Length: 465
Image 1 (cartoon, one colour):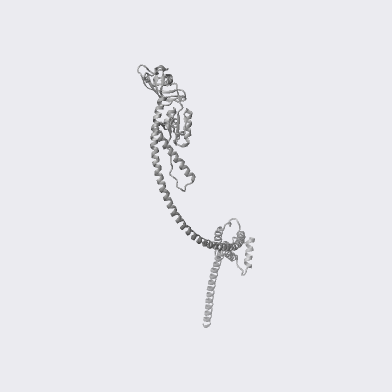
Image 2 (tube, helix red, strand yellow):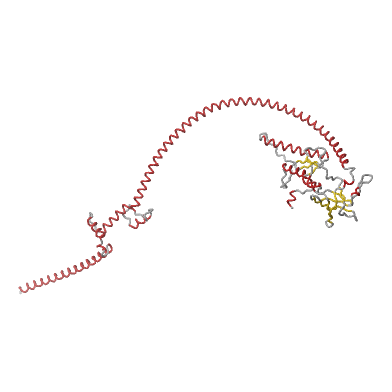
């Protein structure tokens, strides 16, 4: 009973031990299976990570094997990825200065460098080094030139200082001379003041004598003017007697001055046989007679009244057109009638004196130079030009009065003063000629009346037409 119990206990123990052992083996197997599955997953993850770093087949490339060998032989030995990371960081640190820069960041920085897109970086660095070396040499040369220039500047400063010293010495000497000159000037000024006082006294005396002389001359001028008026009256009387003698006692045939050569009854005009060549002029009047016998004076010396009156309105070379002013009723003007003007004499040479400013060219500006054109016109007509207003002058032709500019001061050039004196003399002569002609009853013609007398038109009027 006792032995059976012990065996049963041992068997039970053994069974329990086996049960525990089986359970432990089951647990161990389960643990091993779990670890195997975890290892399998880790292997798959490792293979995926390795594929991200190195694609299948790329491990056999020569460049990759060389990099792996270089990484394995480096100290400390590193993996290919670690070797590449360290190499990139070292490269970036040397190139950009930051170990954390990526290749993209490096590319962006590299793009900012001029020429990096067409040349390698090392070539750019070598070119930049060459440029820096060239600039360094140029800077060294510029520095040498600067030192040379500073030396030249200092030399120039020294030279200028020497010149200034000499100039100052000269100025001091001149100031000394100026002081002496001032003393002399003050002395001369005092002497000049004394001389001016004496000259002022002399000038006052001369002015007083001049006033007295002027008073005497004025008295003489008044006396001469009175005598002149008396002489002018005598000349006027003599001219009247002379004219009376000239136009009295002529034979009848001498009074026939022209013949009527044409009639324009519609225009109330007649054409006579004298013109510019015979000294006919616009405005000249004529009396018309049937023949020369009708011009015979009566016992009292009076000539009969004509059958008509004419006035020249247009002058040609050898004929003139006349307006019929009046005519006797029933006895009209006909071709063949004769015309006479007792004051007209084509054979007489009239004397003219022309003075003043004229506008012979019709430009609207009167000048003294165009006086020669007026004289030439009178001489071409047959008149005679004289320079003095004597008793036998027939006409005084006056243009515009010469202009007298303001009197120049004493400091003006001698030429200006001489021109003023010449113009002043012209003005005085112009006024004197007018006064003499009016006093002696010499006819005064302006430019327009002269053209009328000569039977010509004013140039400006002809141009307007």
